[in-house]
Image (cartoon, rainbow, N blue to C red):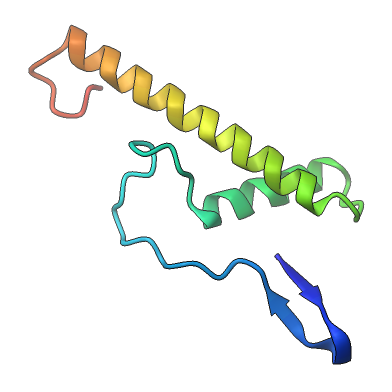
Length: 90
């Protein structure tokens, strides 16, 4: 997410530490910024690319991905209860 400041300088609002590769974001219910960015862009396209709702798109993407992460965590926990010898719960 960027915005134009005075003199057409691009300001970056997404500055954050990079997550290490392979980190399981579903375990801590926090989708990565890249996942949120991609989903927000999909939502933007679903709205026919009309400008003006970038923040709403971002927040909706965050909520949706958090729900997915919670669902996956619960599903994996159920799978492990029913199949304790399975490492990944699939």
